[in-house]
Length: 187
Image (cartoon, rainbow, N blue to C red; front, side, top):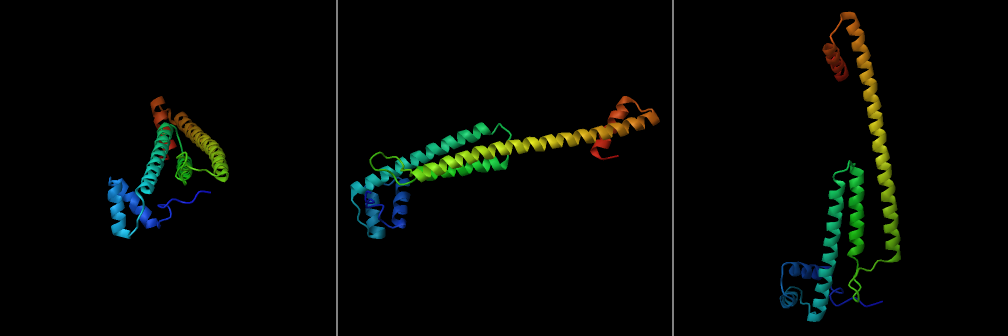
């Protein structure tokens, strides 16, 4: 197993400062000077360059993942969905980002995913698919029950209105208005 780079062996606050200074647009030489001034840390220019290059690649992968996730959410935005389905998508995005931002393989510049990570991701995708299917089934059952309840309520209102119209000889418009009032619970 390869030994961690000079930068990776630094404390988290030093690595964080390097990231902040790099995002601010400072040059390698400015970052090296700032590291020496702020932390008394001496790192070779080439080690810093490799680290910054790796950070750029990782940020690029994360940005690409965000764009893919946003496109998926936009595409799903036109479909009826529940909060559970949206939460599952967000959780899956977070899991993918975690794997993508893992330690870099210096030779290829790609994130190293352990076999266990791949298995867990596959399991998560399977569970997400099942949850989405169950969610759709549940929404269908709720809509079906609501439609049955509305139909029963309307039938009851219509029967009551028809009975009242037979007694008082109501006009068809009056019967319809009476059905609406009974349905809304106003009568």
